[in-house]
Image (cartoon, rainbow, N blue to C red; front, side):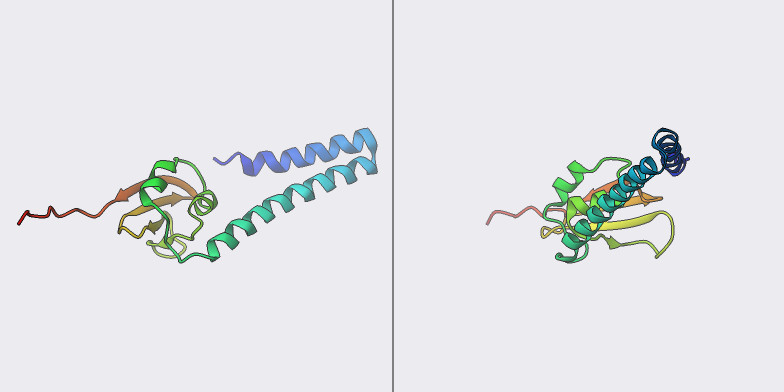
Length: 136
Protein backbone atom coordinates (compact mmCIF):
# COMPACT_ATOMS: atom_id res chain seq x y z
CA UNK A 1 0.00 0.00 0.00
CA UNK A 2 1.27 3.44 -0.88
CA UNK A 3 1.16 5.48 2.33
CA UNK A 4 2.12 8.72 0.55
CA UNK A 5 -1.38 8.88 -0.93
CA UNK A 6 -2.76 8.95 2.60
CA UNK A 7 -0.07 10.73 4.62
CA UNK A 8 0.42 13.78 2.40
CA UNK A 9 -3.26 14.87 2.37
CA UNK A 10 -3.57 14.12 6.10
CA UNK A 11 -0.43 16.18 6.81
CA UNK A 12 -1.77 19.07 4.68
CA UNK A 13 -5.09 19.02 6.54
CA UNK A 14 -3.28 18.77 9.89
CA UNK A 15 -1.05 21.73 9.08
CA UNK A 16 -4.06 23.78 7.99
CA UNK A 17 -6.01 22.96 11.16
CA UNK A 18 -2.97 23.71 13.33
CA UNK A 19 -2.40 27.01 11.54
CA UNK A 20 -6.07 27.93 12.01
CA UNK A 21 -5.93 27.18 15.72
CA UNK A 22 -2.72 29.15 16.21
CA UNK A 23 -3.12 32.16 13.90
CA UNK A 24 -6.60 32.04 12.32
CA UNK A 25 -6.72 33.21 8.68
CA UNK A 26 -3.11 34.47 8.46
CA UNK A 27 -1.92 31.01 9.51
CA UNK A 28 -4.10 29.31 6.89
CA UNK A 29 -2.76 31.73 4.27
CA UNK A 30 0.82 30.89 5.27
CA UNK A 31 0.20 27.12 5.03
CA UNK A 32 -1.61 27.53 1.69
CA UNK A 33 1.31 29.57 0.35
CA UNK A 34 3.77 26.90 1.47
CA UNK A 35 1.73 24.11 -0.14
CA UNK A 36 1.45 26.00 -3.43
CA UNK A 37 5.22 26.58 -3.38
CA UNK A 38 5.80 22.85 -2.77
CA UNK A 39 3.53 21.93 -5.71
CA UNK A 40 5.26 24.46 -7.97
CA UNK A 41 8.71 23.08 -7.07
CA UNK A 42 7.64 19.56 -8.08
CA UNK A 43 6.01 20.84 -11.28
CA UNK A 44 9.16 22.78 -12.19
CA UNK A 45 11.33 19.69 -11.63
CA UNK A 46 9.11 17.58 -13.86
CA UNK A 47 9.15 20.18 -16.62
CA UNK A 48 12.95 20.51 -16.42
CA UNK A 49 13.44 16.75 -16.67
CA UNK A 50 11.09 16.46 -19.62
CA UNK A 51 12.68 19.45 -21.38
CA UNK A 52 16.11 17.82 -21.13
CA UNK A 53 14.68 14.52 -22.36
CA UNK A 54 13.06 16.22 -25.36
CA UNK A 55 16.49 17.23 -26.69
CA UNK A 56 17.62 13.59 -27.17
CA UNK A 57 16.32 10.73 -29.28
CA UNK A 58 13.93 8.30 -27.59
CA UNK A 59 15.64 5.34 -25.96
CA UNK A 60 19.25 6.52 -26.12
CA UNK A 61 21.77 6.82 -23.33
CA UNK A 62 25.48 7.69 -23.29
CA UNK A 63 26.50 4.39 -21.67
CA UNK A 64 24.19 1.48 -20.92
CA UNK A 65 26.80 -0.03 -18.58
CA UNK A 66 26.93 3.14 -16.46
CA UNK A 67 23.14 3.31 -16.39
CA UNK A 68 23.06 -0.30 -15.19
CA UNK A 69 25.47 0.60 -12.38
CA UNK A 70 23.40 3.61 -11.26
CA UNK A 71 19.97 1.97 -11.20
CA UNK A 72 18.39 1.09 -7.88
CA UNK A 73 15.28 -0.90 -7.12
CA UNK A 74 12.27 1.22 -6.21
CA UNK A 75 13.15 4.49 -7.98
CA UNK A 76 10.40 5.99 -10.08
CA UNK A 77 10.31 6.41 -13.85
CA UNK A 78 10.89 10.18 -13.63
CA UNK A 79 14.14 9.57 -11.74
CA UNK A 80 15.37 7.18 -14.44
CA UNK A 81 14.42 9.68 -17.17
CA UNK A 82 16.37 12.34 -15.27
CA UNK A 83 19.44 10.04 -15.11
CA UNK A 84 19.33 9.10 -18.80
CA UNK A 85 18.12 12.49 -20.05
CA UNK A 86 16.03 10.53 -22.54
CA UNK A 87 12.59 8.99 -22.65
CA UNK A 88 12.75 5.22 -22.76
CA UNK A 89 11.60 3.24 -25.76
CA UNK A 90 8.39 1.48 -24.72
CA UNK A 91 8.64 -2.31 -25.16
CA UNK A 92 5.33 -3.39 -23.60
CA UNK A 93 1.79 -2.62 -24.71
CA UNK A 94 0.63 0.91 -23.99
CA UNK A 95 -1.14 1.45 -20.63
CA UNK A 96 -0.50 -2.07 -19.32
CA UNK A 97 1.33 -3.21 -16.22
CA UNK A 98 4.21 -3.87 -15.95
CA UNK A 99 5.69 -1.22 -18.20
CA UNK A 100 8.93 -2.17 -19.93
CA UNK A 101 11.28 0.50 -21.30
CA UNK A 102 14.63 0.16 -23.06
CA UNK A 103 17.60 2.51 -23.30
CA UNK A 104 20.42 1.75 -25.78
CA UNK A 105 23.87 3.21 -26.34
CA UNK A 106 25.98 3.55 -29.48
CA UNK A 107 27.79 0.24 -28.79
CA UNK A 108 24.57 -1.81 -29.20
CA UNK A 109 24.32 -2.43 -25.45
CA UNK A 110 20.95 -1.81 -23.90
CA UNK A 111 19.25 -1.79 -20.53
CA UNK A 112 15.69 -3.06 -20.30
CA UNK A 113 13.82 -1.77 -17.24
CA UNK A 114 10.55 -3.05 -15.82
CA UNK A 115 8.32 -0.64 -13.89
CA UNK A 116 5.32 -1.69 -11.82
CA UNK A 117 3.08 1.21 -10.75
CA UNK A 118 5.82 3.62 -11.81
CA UNK A 119 8.52 2.03 -9.62
CA UNK A 120 11.55 0.17 -10.95
CA UNK A 121 11.36 -3.51 -10.05
CA UNK A 122 14.02 -5.10 -12.25
CA UNK A 123 16.43 -4.30 -15.03
CA UNK A 124 18.64 -6.30 -17.38
CA UNK A 125 21.82 -5.21 -19.14
CA UNK A 126 22.38 -6.88 -22.48
CA UNK A 127 25.69 -6.47 -24.27
CA UNK A 128 26.49 -7.65 -27.78
CA UNK A 129 28.52 -10.81 -28.03
CA UNK A 130 32.01 -10.18 -29.26
CA UNK A 131 33.26 -12.43 -32.01
CA UNK A 132 36.93 -13.33 -31.58
CA UNK A 133 39.17 -12.17 -34.41
CA UNK A 134 41.21 -15.02 -35.86
CA UNK A 135 44.89 -14.17 -36.38
CA UNK A 136 46.03 -14.32 -39.98
